[in-house]
Image (cartoon, rainbow, N blue to C red):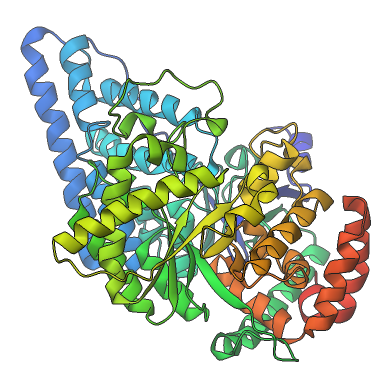
Length: 597
């Protein structure tokens, strides 16, 4: 590299990724350019096929032993990490990896490394067709498991187990949850990856361990070199390379303020969620794994506002049975008793694991637009056996505390009536079998498509509560695909149309005397939360770490002022006007939350 190029590379540069685990770290980089899954293609003679299959199976067994040893070394309070390792152990036996690789070796006479890479490519192709970002992130778990097998096959030692003593920020294309667990807390201050998202299991483990992280930073391993000074901002997702003295001082001050804010927020976990004039709003947590219950408790959450039940189905090599689901749900409900636990029934189908779901009717062709296809409650009504299995487990678990059942993607009252008929059938079966259950379990629906908003007054007469899922509601209402780089910037939670639909839903629910909650991402954004509280929502459910921030905002408010804010925002004609008004209003009324920002 010539001097001019070197100097240009060392100019200050700010790159944006996704803040996956909060914290600010300033340290030299340690870059890993690990290439996994690369091996020369080798044609096998017929007499070597059985031996190659045996070599592959032995590599899987070794990978399993490594994971079990890691699991045994972890403390019981790392429940999130334990659950993720358990899922990876099960994936090692999944036919997507094990059987398909063996088939490719046997049928195509190629070496194990290349066969596994081929099998992984087929899996990736299926996941690439999925629009939902949460489900899409699950491919990374399959890849992490395959990478571990690749490492055993090639004899590669784990680079993250090096004896470095310097304090560094680790940078790589991607790290598995197990990689993060191996990182030494006294030397690895944070990590940055090119892949991943906020819902990835790597991010979940990082948050559990308190390791600051930024993910989804494209080409960071090419831009940054080992030894380069880096600022990692896990709050905003910013990565600053070769920072200037002024930037270093600025971020050190940010870090000091954030640490002070965390200490100040800690006591809010034990305070009630009410305004200065006594108006109460329940603040709950969104989770996808049972182990995350502890994070809700740590942050003072008042229950589970959304449990995404898909993980318990698709982290396994086969579908779970009723007994397993009953144990999982029952433990969660009992742990939080008497607080409510809202469990969403399977939100799958269409592009979401359709190849792993049972089909009693004719197999469907690949859907041209799966986001508008056979998914969520539509799939459950077409394939009722799986829905009944889950409903039996839910009702059996209901005796352990307060369960609320949430039905996804409802678009008409007829769907609710059909589901209720299935529920009556399940209740009768349990009664005949003399199996106890709570016959007063609340059943609610997700409001996430425009037709549900328009028919909210009719739907409210059929259910016990509404839960507004803004992630999909925004996407369907504004015709915006968040994963499309050309229009993602138009995805706007504070769009006047979205806010008016939220208000319409709240009014329809309250007119029928039912609660209206929100479980979309905007519920945990303090700027959005101030507006949402003014629109009259009864519950906001969010990522657990956001609960103290929203509680502090709530406790510093008067409900009359929040209502006035909500009405003022509803009168705005466009997004720019809303942002300008909030930009003036929020720092003046909530300096703790917004003056620093």
